[in-house]
Each structure stands twice: as structure tokens, then as C-alpha cells.
Amino acid sequence: MTFDASADVIHLKNKRSLEGIIKEETDEVVVIEVGIGTVTIGKNEIESIERAGEEEQESLIKKFKKKDIEKGAFAPSSLKELSDRFQKLKRSKRRVDAMRSQSASLKEQFNQKRDKFNSLMSTFDGKNIELRNLDPNHDVKYYNKVVSDVNSLSARLSDLADTLKDLNERLPDSSRAVQKSISDYTKNLYDFKIYFEEELRSSEARRLTEDEIYFYDTIKDALAGLEKNLRKHTIALSKSSGGLLTEVTLNDKVNCVMIVDTGASVVSITRNIAGQLGMDLGGAHKDIELILADGSLVKAKAVSLKSVRVGDSKAEDVLAVVVDNPPAPGVDGLLGMSFLGNFSVKVDSANKELILETIK
Image (cartoon, rainbow, N blue to C red):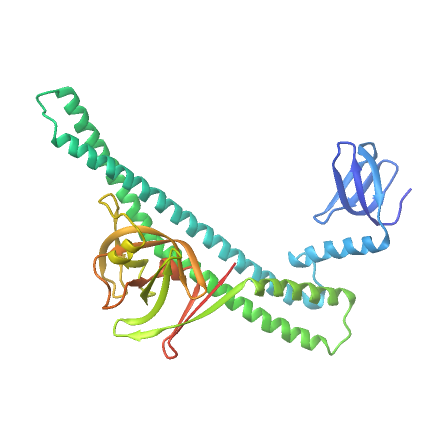
């Protein structure tokens, strides 16, 4: 005995249920399509079946077809190239997600190691003070223990310093990889939109099948969703002898002026700004090397900024360094890649504009 396909909910005796389109039913089994394939269920496992009407059946069929279109499993033969281009766009979006995840992991490792270094440095300084105040002849055993502790801490600090140096050298490349993936994705998105609109216009000259119409509608909705997640902000810049300047808000409370510097590996701020942010720059803070636009290196204290905002563009947990001297008179720091790497960046020097694009 076989029935026509219908949209159903199968209730199982184990209290679970399956919603799908029944493709076949016999005295022994029921075969149901659930969107990712078919499932065969023995009749002895089924408690009951709710059979849906024709409208629900059509709705579920469209739901499954939409998923197949979005993942590239279904496309009318006339629209195969459009489907392939859409899948390429989705792959570039997944690459953005992957690059962001790798960058966030690297940044988290750096922050954890830096915090560990600062904590150990505080302990190391305390042990050194204790050692200087000890009389080695008074309690030789305890004195030797403190010496051992100092040596052990020194070795651990040396290992952490090497690790931090390695992570610090990898961070700029990570930021650039994120930036490139976003730039590639936004270009692919604009290119695909143009191609899609051209295909849609050319399709108006011929009679479309029902599958073609549904395919176009599904891709159109998916494209609108991708565009909705695209963020593009244009920030006015001012010119100075030091470069192009922009106003920046740090940690949602301190406003300052920075030079836009795509050659700087991280954001830098002056000690004055660090003081306004309430930062404690005690000796425990690790010094890292900052790469300037001219390729020169300076050593500076590494810190984390809760947020950096330029216009309507904002990034959180931004690595920064504190420098002794401002990069130019009246300037509070450099807006470097630890912030800019979160965006596709275009600096329009002629119109004095900074264009930042990103996606959710």
C-alpha cells in the first residue's frame, strides 16, 4: 500500500518527532524527506502521524527547495553559473569569518600571555626586593630558596617574553589577513550584485519556469540579507604636517586626535591619554616593538583598549601601545592596523576622507 507524498509530522514512540514530506509509506516503513535527505522509519517505532494539507505541503516543499538553492544543491540548468557565483560569494564570506576567528584567537593568546607576564613581573619585582633585604648569613636555607624563586621567575619571564615577541610579530599579518578577506568579500558582493541584476533584466525577455522564478526570488532575498549586514562609513579627515588626522573616541569616554597610519602595526596613544583613561602603567607592563610607517621600531608599553570608535565605526578589545612622545604636535597617537584591520580601508587623500567597510 503506497500513498501520495504529503507534508507530515511523524510522532515517534520515544517522544521525538520528525517534520517533512512523506515520499513513501508501506505496511512496514515510512520514508520521509526532512530537508537534508530521507529517513526510513519502521512502523513499529511510530506513535502517530499528522498529515498536513496541500498549502502546508507546498510551504514545506518550498522551504526545502530554498535550503537547496542557498547551499548550491539545486539550480535550474539555465542558472547554473549564477548559482556557482553565489556559492563563491558565500565562500568569501566564510573566509572572513575564519580570518576573524583566527585573529581573535591570536589576540586572546597575546592578552592572556601579556597578563601572565605582568603578574609574574610583579611577583618577580617583589622577590627581588625581598632578596635585597635578606642577610644571606642569617638563614642560608631560606635565602637560597628566594634566590631559586627569583631564578625560576626570571626563566619563566624570559620564555613569556619570547612568546609575546612571536605573537606580536604575527598580529599585524593577522590584521592584514582579516582586512584583505573583508575587502575581497565586499568586492565579490558588489560584483555579484551587478551580475545578478544583469541576469534578472535579461530574463525578462523570456518566459521563466516556476523553478527559475523561485530561484531568482531566493537569491534576491539572500542578497538583500548580505547587503543588510554590510556597513560602510565615510569619515572626514583633516590635513596636518604629520599626515591625515581624525577624531577618535577611546573606551567610550576619552576623545583624542590621531594620525591615520596604515603602516603602523597597532594603535598608539600618549601617556597623557593613557592617564585620562585611568591606566596604570607600572613596571609590570610588557614592552613591545611598534612598527612605524617609515619601518622604524620603537619600544612601548602594551595595553588593551575596550573600544576604539571613529565616526560610526567601532572595534572592541583593540591592542594598543603607550608611547612617551606624540607623533606630531597636537596629536595624541596613531590609528594603526589593530583598529584598521577590522575593516576594508580606503584613504581618499584628495577628498580628505577615510572610508571604512565591514560586515556583521
